[in-house]
Image (cartoon, rainbow, N blue to C red; front, side, top):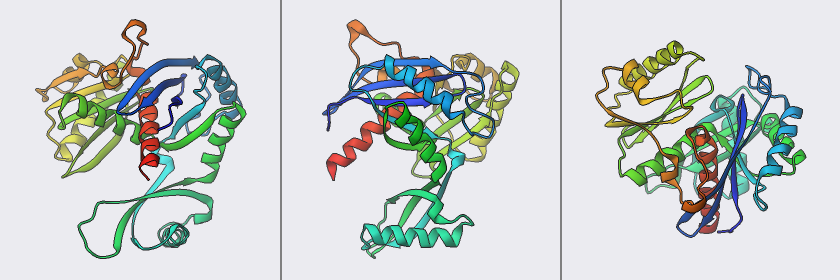
Length: 307
């Protein structure tokens, strides 16, 4: 794997945050955490962004980053991503896959597939036939092109762009590996939204978002909605990891959900990466999405080395 840095960049409503990692063989060292404040209207309610302001702030962020940390990983909201499972012939070559996916999408969507960028991965199969089920993720080209453009103008080089849920998936999986606990929930508070992530053989990947508002009351109501969703999904967690903004505390969760008699802790993100103890960067929960992005970038580069 390349020894250059990987930078996860989380563009939020109040801050643009970055986490820089130095990947190595079987290691992942934390280099630093950085953030710049942004104007309140940098992201509008319909997720259309003030791109010139973002360019300005990304340039400001770039100047704070270490040298050789221009390769960035970014994400878009899950509601901007179309996901479909399609059954295709695994013997197709790359060009044939592209054509077959476009044909299949045209049958399932009202959107012209030529207006979309898409990626796909084969799902596990025990069948001996050549037919495989593929998970396809697609997004409007203008959303991706806009994000690529602001990075280019800020002299940053995107490695990839993924859905926000993939970043929580990385945090959850790294927490599972560290604590050897695969039946715990991960709950994140980011701006005005709560998100929960969990996965198992029975339920697969579970990701859902809930409105949290800006007050203790609305956050508590969001936690109640989250709890009901977990109940309906028949998930029986043995514990809860919390990350994101500091106003999401163990005390508030257990106060809002008295039915849970669970261990509930704020996840120490520094447990998930290596760091220089003598010069340890401060990695608070607010950097969870940026860290998840950087970890996703590390995994993606490792997959390239394996091909």
